[in-house]
Length: 294
Ligand SMILES: [Zn+2]
Image (cartoon, rainbow, N blue to C red; front, side):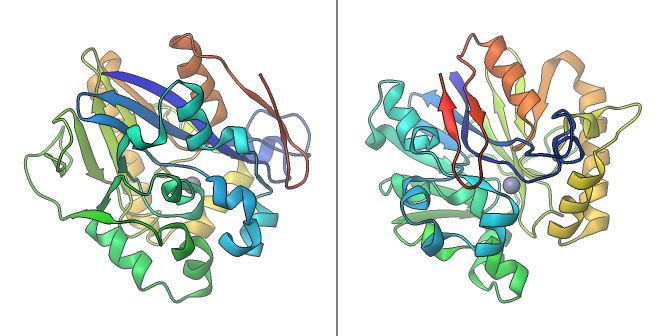
């Protein structure tokens, strides 16, 4: 099973190193939208979708103004999953399944570029998104992004434990090597996605954490600005921090057999792209529009 690591969009809020832990100064930071494109016998599978073509074309119709400006979303056509799938030589229709960590605007924007794909989601996340009423929820969940979905596959927890975590196995139509692992806290139905690539587990932790050193098993830390953002976006602090503890234990336990990464850490993404010999694409942030350098 071949796995490509893609960044399907960037967010470049002001704050530099206090937001991403590596950009000097307090100017534009750089957060990515780390998605996976998996080649399987059942067709292409996307894990998360970042920002999509419709977000690029009609940002004010699709995204909340607050997040558009505060997160300084970089809307670049070449960075969409649709453009990257085609650049890899596939057709958009080859994407048969999309497995979501959760439905926040910075993960779900590309769904509408693959209207024939089945979207797999944890039931609790689906419900939370459908009843969104608070100002924060209306900003984070954008029904415009999922209006064209023909088929949702919704799941309750079931099946075996996976390394101490409750999990969902046997995602309909997908190979058994792809699991959904509930990691609630950032949202009510947030999940990680585990992929057995034959030599190790790749674990996409979504927004269960935001910064690579939060998974440091000895001395976890997160830059102050990013920590504040995570706190602002959480729905259950206790569960979120508890799940981070469990992820560190998982890392401790599985060692070399696990590569864990989150959705928004650029350094994690570039390490994985480099490991696979993938080209690393640079974004030079501007305000609301970046430029991609290949
Ligand atoms: Zn996110």
